[in-house]
Image (cartoon, rainbow, N blue to C red; front, side, top):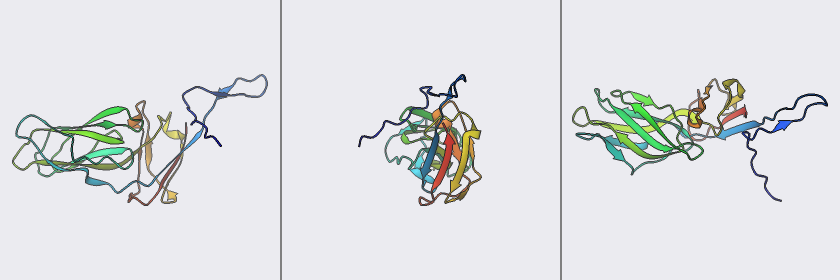
Length: 195
């Protein structure tokens, strides 16, 4: 038996109404189901020594996220500042970048979900021994640009209701579900939403 091509919700198909009524837009229920790995401050790249001057592009030693998700940066010393630029692809394979401002030893989370990370650009050091590690956050990227956060109907984590929230945006990489539970690579996230 042949496999049907996936439905594209952006083609504008409509459903016929009763005789004499206007047709209405066709919608489908999407089901996101993943078991994201645990977050970590160095899951994408171990601590990178900041350069004495200028910026440094890193393209080796990178581990892409297990599922499309946000990226974090963490400095090892107070006083670390400057922008870390993450380059990679979104869930659809389009090239994206995210600029994350370093803040000392704080872990700072980006605003885009990356499927792959291909380059990390780090800033000049503030002091001797400054490093920045790159990891993964808890915000998960969806495979769709969702029309409205209210279109998320059911959200489950490990079989129970999760109180996380959905942020929607016209850019795919910014359609993010902020998971409340703690992922560990075995607990499944189930999201049911209308597209």
